Length: 187
Image (cartoon, rainbow, N blue to C red; front, side, top):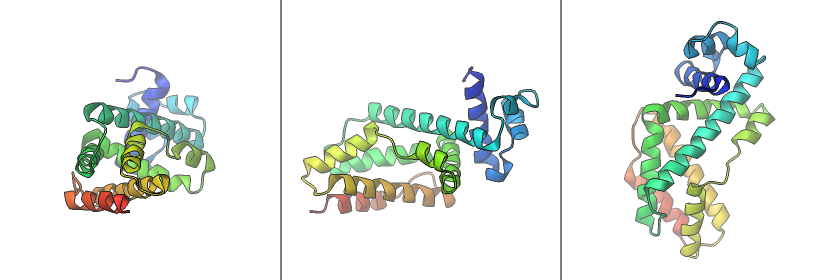
């Protein structure tokens, strides 16, 4: 459990956004979710924009931790099947438990970032071990345009996760992941 007040508030804001949507994200709702006195969130994040920025920064931090944790549990993929296994594991984490709540919040923030350049900048994909593993696998298979193919594969993965969230599924179909990976590996 987070003890830093700003982290507690950002975590509470993530929960509110996941559970109540963007309209439910208010300073008072975050105060209640964090079990803190009314006005606490407002004291730390004066505006709604400041609250969203704090929430998005925390979301990116948690996402990076999730990717590092997943990479630590599996060896870097050397084959298409190993990449599919890694993507399936990551998807399951994003579709269940706290990962599901973070995914719901993430997609709400992505939509908000369309109108907010600061949020968009924070949400811009970061370098991480997962992205690196995809690049290395594609390069090892001598695929042309490694960057473009990696981006396409990861965007397709994100689309599958979003679709599964909407359908309230807890996993992605293996054949869908195999199709994404096969398309990325085509000569």
